[in-house]
Image 1 (tube, rainbow, N blue to C red):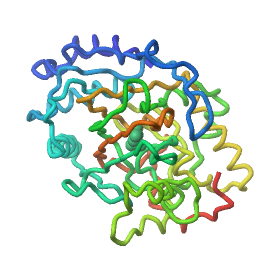
Image 2: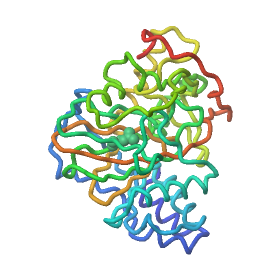
Image 3: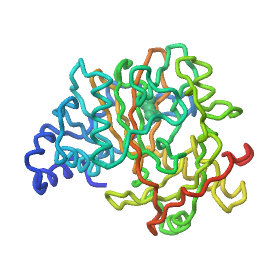
Length: 360
Ligand code: SIN
């Protein structure tokens, strides 16, 4: 992966969109406040120490006011910066009075540019003031929390999410409850050619039911039922009835980079394999994606918005110190059907939710 700093200089030197270059002023690699964090942070979900060492991933853009009107060139500049930073942009210094509607408007602007739509959450109820917004609330007493295992947003949908845009509206003290990101592209690149070849033509089912259906202890539905701060949408939820087939390795539609695309949150099993074979390969992929050398973490400050690319990254909220209230709001943008290295999408193929025995 290119470093954020070298990506920046390339952008400044070669971008034809000089007028939009103002958006990149002051851009800097993500500052990792390692010295401010307690060492040996244990994630309560996995019981493992949380570590991240990939400092090149991500870019902070301190001079982008997300409430302004953006031209197409502006949006393309932002998306190029995201591509060059491996898919993570942190927009710091937002106006304290930035509203939920400003957040939706920025998401809509990205969606319009990409000729797509905002994707309201498939199963969770939207925010009462803005149904496009998924609000993730963690009360200080909650011991089970929504979104705290690795995943790529909406991978259980035929057209999974391209970008997600997360705004922290009530953030705990710096360095706890960060969002952890793994570059699934760096993870893929680091595999041996033999392993890459093994994975390239495999497909796996992704299941909304696994994460949000009844009868899966510890999933996000269980978290919602325990906390009562988040609710299932009060409508028919057909997505719970159909798992979707996705390539295990997808090719990013903008950069052409291949990356791993599976997660313990949504992936149920590999198509055409015995459960034990599927489980072994998926477990390997999950452990591999979570290795510190492919990960970085975004710490939350007030007035900060983080945008990430679900086609190149996996992410999780870190359940370390759960003693403070945390409220974040997310807009996700509908992407294309994920495609494999042949340019083929598999997500037209669906199946009934997989039996619990097949879940890894
Ligand atoms: C998410 O999974 O979209 C939210 C991550 C977080 O809460 O940090």
